[in-house]
Length: 639
Image (cartoon, rainbow, N blue to C red; front, side, top):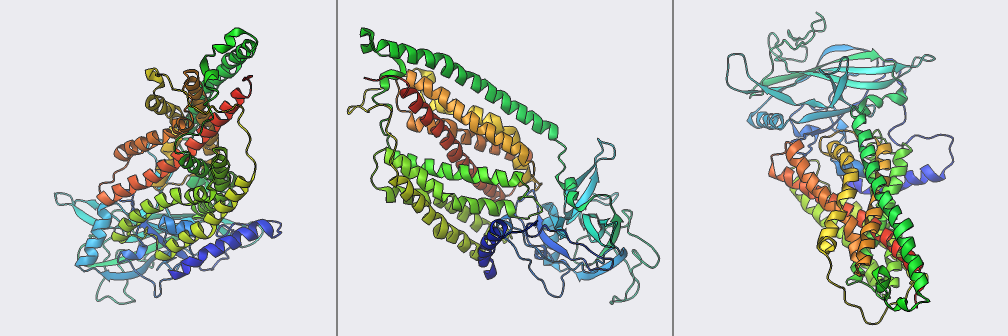
């Protein structure tokens, strides 16, 4: 566990090697193809056992399964540890390339009361066992009854199932103790080597029988390779009781036409691509609607207003200003709590940079699911390095507000948001630790996260802030009056609370369909790899946040309300409220979580996601409104 503290150094070395060392071609760590000759041993690894009902992963050997002589942990990156992956060697050691075998006995276990209870609890919670072969996850092929010759893949096999004997009303627990593995390979036509392109399993519950006393040479009567007797679904199932259980497996090798480069396509096949296109069309309709409104304001209303105001400068009517020009002496007055606004804007820039660069890497294929844990690792590292832009943005805005204590604002920018998230994460991690789950982040990884935060992110925020504060700020297009004017009473539809809540609906509406797929991939343990769709939706979100904020900001200024700073941030940022409400709706309609700790984990993590979404969308809306106000007030002549 202590060795995990040093995986950060490995990540930095990998990035240096990737970007700075010359090479003709390269593969990311863990995703390079491997050629196997006939007779080569294959290493099957055991991953975590997981359940969509509890969201609490456990290590494979937390259950009394068969164990090898020595349990060896595989090297894990930061993302894998945070996801709860615990990759270890497995007892399935007789996998020989292209040599099919039948009825291999793994071990014989005599369960005590505690072991039987552990199996029953995991069966009740519908836990699945996850394994890996040549970096491919184990799947169970299931035929779809609604589509002919269509197969969907379930990740991992169930620990067991519950059922009743014919004529009995008592429900029993049955364990899947026989595994029929199928390894698919693609043969190189020029050589004798082959590459693995599929790893499937069909689990069975079989009450194995044998004659005489048990020893290492005992032959089973229910499964005999010499008699070519294979296990079928008609066998008597194995109950989970305080009795012996014999674990066995078959392995079959099948040649496949699928090439190694396409082996992940079946895992990533999306059956709902039509819904994704509907999501894009839905979002585009919202953007077109908003764009039409902005175009009408900018090209017609604003052009007319500016022309009228500039003509009135030579007339006596110039003394009777109305509309948004009337508040020109107050529109750039610093808002209350402007230091907090600077902190949130800087954090939002940090988030925007992290997401944009992550999207680019994902589109280029660097963050494939085959690069296990790569997505989360990349996001954490990019967040750390984007601290440079966070400090620069917050310092520039702070100096524009005539702030003088740049060190204080820098420290708040570097600490406020991460500290809040870390506090929530620490509490949730304590809950996971209390459940003895492998999803609990070890102390060594916690130390690595704190090291990344204070050792790299905080200094970069200070560097960016120093650079930003040293640069001269652009002067406001108009001068600010010494005495603030009174804001007149506003109509109900321009009340801050109402306009803020209305402003968040359209940005959320532009992304909520894609949000469904993201939540499904996270909480129902499915792969998400449609980054092309996601990038388009992200661009639509940015445009929607900017346009709705500009529209409502214009209406606000026309009603002679110049307090737009915080309003612009909260208008688009309120979409985070709808995201959290949708997450609650998803919890009660799509998930089957019943345990209190699991529910707390779900809402705790979704609170973090919603908070981050608030900071991101709020910053986008703020900068759009900031650009808009500077543009319109620099276009008119002010005495």
